[in-house]
Amino acid sequence: MVLVHGLRTSRTMWRAQVEALGIAGHRAVAIDLPGHGRRRSERFTFDGAVRAVADAVDELGRPALVVGMSLGGYVAIAHAARHPEQVAGLVAAGCSTRPADLLVGPWLLAVRVIARLPDAGAGLNQFMVDHTLTATAAADVAAGGLALDVMDDALREMRSATPLADLARVRVPVWLVNGRYDHFRGEERRYLAACRDGRLVVLRGAKHLVSLDAPVAFTRVLLAALMELDAPGPDPAGRTSPSAQAPGPHPADDARGIGHDDDVVPEPREDLRGDLARVSASEVQPVPPEDRP
Image (cartoon, rainbow, N blue to C red; front, side, top):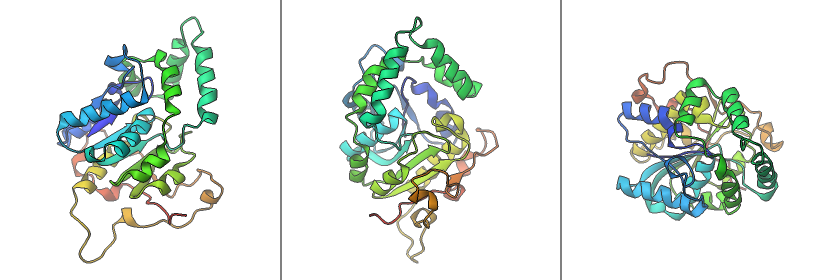
């Protein structure tokens, strides 16, 4: 498994997942994208980020389950489309909204205003970290440093991302994972419809950085994905697994809302170091794509 971090963070944001997956007997490699973590001195480009994922999979020597969060999710989607031979499965978290100019433009303007503050926005960033993450999650994020000066490059580069077109090209199983209160959930059903073999998982109580807000539940999704990828072929008796069952219509879909809770996985209460190795796919509630328009 290759884990790709979000904007301004680094490989250290995945500590909980790397630790738990190791306990379960899986090798998980968390990387730094250009402009982040140990690669802070490099300029961020979208193509360079995709190459970083490709290099990590090359080092593993076999196709991987590639997992991306936020910025890393967009990068992981593009990587899966450009390097299909390297990908056994794809988990794209916190990136279910297209980075159109209408979204990126205001963010870019805000970033440039914040950059003019005396501390270049460090205090504001710390305030957000302290008030949106647990102490453990905040420590994991801070361990690799925060790349405050990468925002301008990253947001400009994101305009070249084409997640819907890329998802349509991906032939391996795809898991779209979002927090219940993620502001990047707006087009999750459209993303799902673009997937050839997709599932949607929404974690109750979690926000945008879903792997940090709900580390146990998120790790269980990863373990369930690995189990599904390792499972044998179709059931000879013709039975259909839960991940292949189409959900019924929901009023929120017609309203383009995100208020539905019938496709939500609750955050488990037990310790992250529990017996995650025995998690089964039935412990999550993936929502496969509806009939395509």
